[in-house]
Image (tube, rainbow, N blue to C red; front, side, top):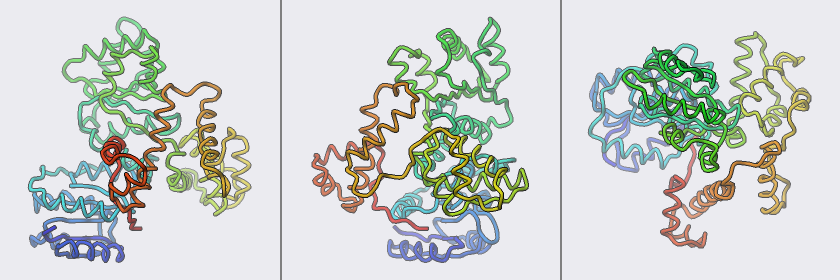
Length: 454
């Protein structure tokens, strides 16, 4: 790499590590803990790239982006932040930051993004990110890779006209994602309409629905539950949209493709709704976000009910280990109940156990005991997956879904173990190198040796 990089972060360790890494890569580095100093450097014409934290002692890095763009229109900015919420990703995208990375971040990944930023010669004009009311109430919080990937995809699609299909289990936050896409898009001042099956009934139903949602966003909630007749009405409605058509979004707990293959969902409707598919992961797929969400809901309880509560270390571990079949909604309701029923400011493990005793039985998320065979561990998790469907069979295609669930982590761990050397990794796995490359592409695996910065 070649260029001068301005680094702004109030964490001395991060400034030191980035300075050393970027200097070794051939760059000149100016590092500061002050946003005012950063802006002075920008005004003076210094720097070919800015890497900035969001929360600084003397200001907000995101709010500075429009001013940087005005002062230096071609200067790329990479935003790094420990505020791992969907709002941060969306605001960075709205302010047209070159890139956004959550903390902790992969140092090799940041170096690659920095190299791309330095090579970039053009950048679209920036527009300031408007203030949002009530954004703190959105529990779209998560630092896990699955949630960060979702946030980035939301930021990329929010101002397109592509239809969006949002999938995920009950209680994961599908409706919140749809609302966030609308509220942060160019259509934010226009109607946001959630359509029910009853809205499609009658000769004037579809026309009335379109009039209500004119130019805004129209969401078909749990579209898989629509009858054949309702599905047909949706198809005709979508085919008749003219000028000022609303943005179409839909949500579904069910695997629509599997239902379509079974003949339970119209093929023509499936392809009309699935322009972009956003999958909201279940809590058991992002265990490390559970403590973060718990803190969020306890803070909301303090704000709404005036009750200061915190989880003891044992209670926090129990909350993290529980399976949460009802996902974020169940976690929120449980913590709201604990805020009301807890005798002291510190919620104890016994109080959590008492509340969870009335919840659906669910195997803890923690693994089995030491010495457990891999086959036994896999069998335990598979049985848990089948049990989640409450006696009904899972959607067809279990075999391929499970293979993908196993393949991804296996290849990632093998790549880490071989320091990203694909030839060694292929040999370790016992597969052809071309096969490994195809799987890396198909599974969207980053080929970097992970090194985390706190």
